[in-house]
Length: 178
Image (cartoon, rainbow, N blue to C red; front, side):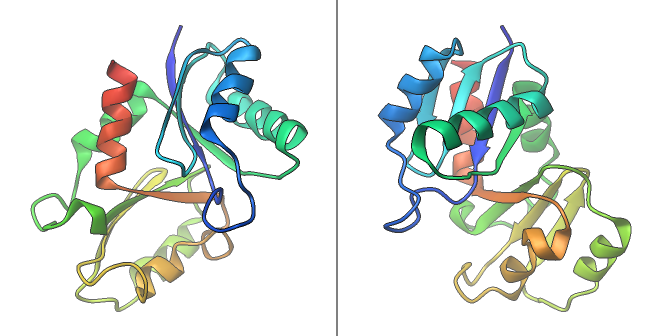
């Protein structure tokens, strides 16, 4: 059984779109996924499945909608893909706080013109690096008022995007290895 990491976008951020992680684990286990684990309350799931990532994304979106009555975009990475994300770490040498270092996981590679617009933004002292379906972003002053974070949206990128801080990314890899 292949270890996969499912990243649910936009749940449990406020009073709406609430999904209890215990209920999510129960649902996914009942559907035949193996060794289902969640991390934090923000939609991070590690599970065993032989389904290809794109099919798993669609299946999870449909199953969550059916069970919880909310439409939640899901982005999936295999354990190996997540390990590559961690190994690549293009901004690690400048990052001082892993909670201000985010990886935005994309459902597909964005259009090159949209990426060019993104990389042309003057957001100093923030920094970014694009690598395939991931965008690494260092926000030294935090994310709340970040111009860069505001640009890393589905509408600007043209694909589904969901971000996790570096601490969460490395913890998810550790969970996938456990």
